Image (cartoon, one colour):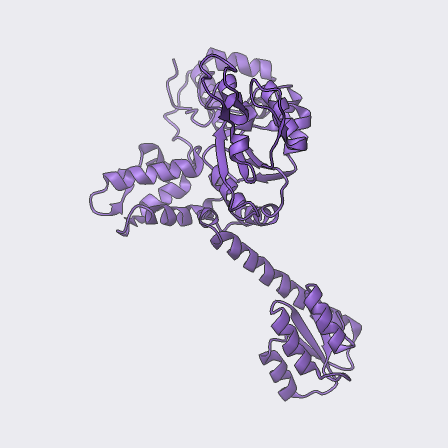
Length: 433
């Protein structure tokens, strides 16, 4: 912004935030050096470009020492001025972004546990920083073990509700009737065994945040009741005719594809659109391999005051592994390794065999090929299993890769006994029953 009147410019800077200021060295109310000093006191992040008719090295040096980004000597071309202002704006944006990310990482204990410097993780941290101050529902998407509850806690602790409780419930851990009672509470005598009235988690979390984990497991009847709370904050205890109003922010998480669940009529479409206001997707560990060394050091630092060492071979094997269980699996494997190690150094011997084999497989987490066979059926079985492994159990993508329809794929899966294999652990070399 070009401040032709310095005092007006100072007053404007106090009321709003400016990215770049273009100021002249010579002005009627005060000179540019004084205005530069005042602007930097108000907002140190604002970049300032000086416009001067005096090709004075002394003036330029003084302006730069006081925090000016650059100076342009008059007369100058409009294109030259635009380039300089553009570069100043880019620097200002980068500085603010770095400050926000550092704040997101260090402001709370939950956020500081989110370790990662790759582009997907930086994007996720930006979303947390933007969504945390709002009251809108948040949907956290990601595979099991990626740290969805950690992200939920970071959102809560960076919100205006941080001083209020955050309550967690896992929809997959309880039967429908128990889950309803846990969420909405019940009155005395509402069902057999209800000897006293009990408040639900919505009441307990009033004013704070309710983290609903495994949302895709919620039964259709409870989906309707959850939608009502999201829309107007109204709820009723089980066995009660009296409606209550609660002020709760809902943060939900799932490892399911809710759009697919909606298409197949297992999840309410209206609830999906209501909960999917601010989606945050956590990348799986295999898609951010450069973060694995950082995570290893971070997780080992929590193992106690002693400093743990790790051989290069063991570290490389961990970086090569496919990590179907994501960060949770890495944490468990490192905990196991620290228990087995006798000299505070983790080697391949303390890691599971499947991880050690990745050093020689050439494909992350992919089992080694066994000896070739002339048996046509065995070759077919291995090939189908290998493609299933590569496509992580997706029948649709596997059928497309094999060039057959899904009906034919299911026949092959049944034929070779592959139907009960976990999608992340299909081993082409295993002798299936």
